[in-house]
Length: 186
Image 1: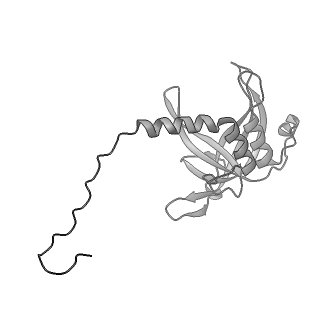
Image 2: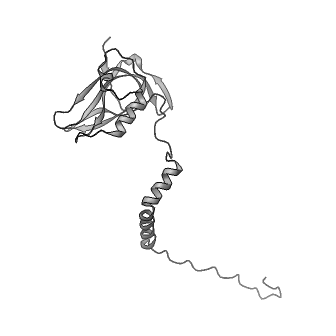
Image 3: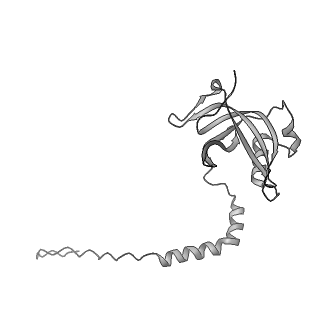
């Protein structure tokens, strides 16, 4: 039974069917190209993974590991290393029949030359839960960043506070009126 192209955005578990190295005709950029078979679909309404292999849907995706200027795209390289246990050797992706770890992919529409196309937006590890961790910076990293940029952050915060519109003062409540009795009001 032949494969068909994916037909919807969303999060999917995927198996790598094939890989290759692709260079751009217009710049110095290089990508690792993937053909993914979608095996499970995350149904956001039920919050459950649904088997998807029976639909035999595939999609082409790329990880741009070299930027237009010919320099490595560190984030993409690190991600490919994490997701696929890649050694950094480009020849790995030209080996036919190689077995790669399963992964998860996020698909969404993007406009290209006036046409909406379905595209792999993210490639993540198989057990990725979607979204991102609330915080991922170590305290030492925060302290270093604070030492470098903290004074600028505080200056901006001070300007925001200084330029904030002043709220009108609310008059204090009047003391309760005395009924003229002998009782001391306190």
